[in-house]
Amino acid sequence: MMTHRLDVNQKRAARRATLSRAWSRFSAFASIATLTAAALLGTLCGTGTALAATPVPTANAATNPAAMAKPNIVVLGDSLSAEYGLPRDTGWVALLRQRLASERIDYNVANASISGDTTSGGLTRLPLVMQRMQPSIVIIELGANDALRGVPLTTTDSNLRAIVAQIRKGGAKPVLIGMYVPPNYGADYTRDFHAIYERLAKELNVPLVPFLLAGLADKPELFQADQIHPTQQAQPLLLDNVWPTLKPLLGNGVRR
View: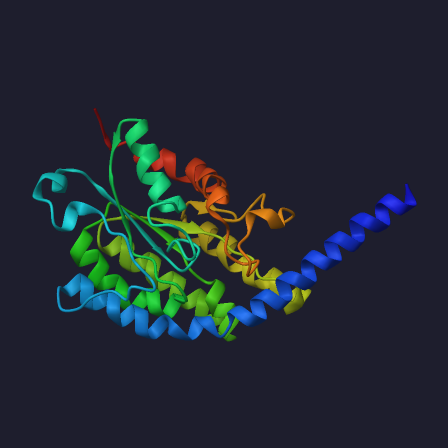
């Protein structure tokens, strides 16, 4: 029994160490957010092209008049939603589109996620996303890169509040996805970071997905080589984490 406990503890310690190293390596990648955000803004304006390295699938509502009758769901996220390292149309956002179709719920789904994006980046590009897509629901999956960049918690809190306010001002419903940071950031920071999402959900009455990666922490086989981004096989689990919070908001969708 003692040997078994030691093995389990050693595995957990190794997992935490691997995550810590991966997050350190990944912090350099976050620096591309500004460039890719500018590319996406150009795409939405019709004046530029999104970088091929960070493709951003979008709903056809913006270009197909026949789709305009359907309400739009927009996902405003980072690499966890932008299909980083995955084949096109295999991420959880694409699976959401498929699930809505299979359950005969008529919503368009637009993925406005950018690898490396922060809450500041999301706040900056949100007005154009709202104008272009005119969403009914906006799913906010941002904040992890704030931690990677050392953004003050008060700034992340303020940005998320402003994002929620802009979404509501545009007549849409916000959904907030909570995030955690690795334990090497310290117990206090880890606790306070996640508490931002719980506090905002309560104070602003926003539906909350507690943690996008819930159920994956002890399954390294469901992460890519960087041990940060989930594999294609993990994407249905991410959708299952989002679905219970999102589904009650879909009552006005047209069922065929």
